[in-house]
Image 1 (cartoon, rainbow, N blue to C red):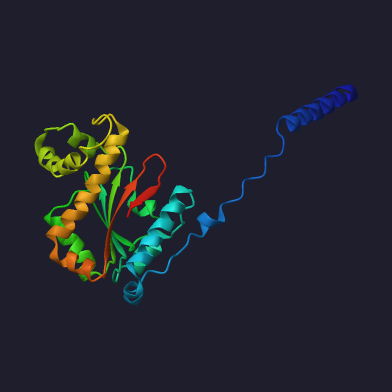
Image 2: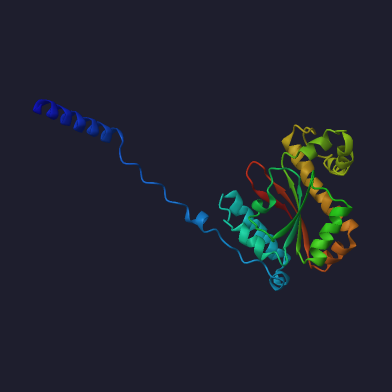
Length: 248
């Protein structure tokens, strides 16, 4: 009987030892990212602060924000609190006309939060009467100081305009981009949608052409630009790097 008891105890301790060896203490859990636990709650811009800002200051803030975005250092924000903070009114600093492209999250690209900017989007970042009215509202009524027309690399609308695509309402839309193709006639190289350098040339000229149309067709915005109350500027987003180059 004693012999069997000793054998049982020896077996028990041997199994316990083997289990302990095969199941070491769990590794220390990684520490939580404090910045994600306590996101920044930015102070929402007031009407007085908006009036005090200059177009050049706002432009520099967009440049700084894009650098943070490209460096993967984007600001953590508590959007829920910002929503509540802007519920009673908005005082955006800029109006951005961007392409419809899903790869360009405009507020993130410039590291901005809720209430910071008006964003309008369509394929090819072109302008029409509705958008002109929206820009006039954003600047003349709501006090924005900067209009930014944002094109981007590898744009499907630009490529379609170069290829003279004909398809439903897309045809009329692309007609507004065709002037940029003509503006690029002196490009030294293969003038096809397969040539990345050519599509970039057309894309940047499309931004410039859009700016010219805005100035020509909006007497309100033209007067504000002349009085230096606002600025209008073009920019070009590189979808490979996230970097925005400003066409000043």
